[in-house]
Length: 82
Image 1 (tube, rainbow, N blue to C red):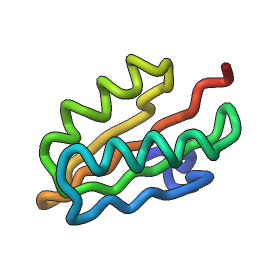
Image 2 (image 1 turned 90 degrees about the vertical axis):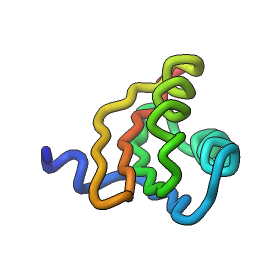
Image 3 (image 1 turned 135 degrees about the vertical axis):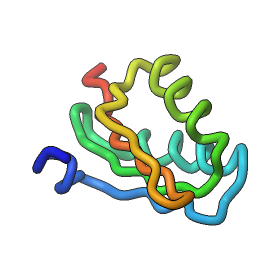
């Protein structure tokens, strides 16, 4: 993991929440961030492996990284500048 991913500007913990809650929370959190900010998302719902990349593609944010560790899904999202 790159040092950049260790220091996100914000963290969204969606642990224990199921679809559609993690993406709804992500949408609200991203709205509050400045363009270019890095957000780390922590989730336990496997559907986020489909939903979060689609969210990023649809809204133009960059999915910088993602990984899964023992049923916990981690995502690093850079908010678009626009």
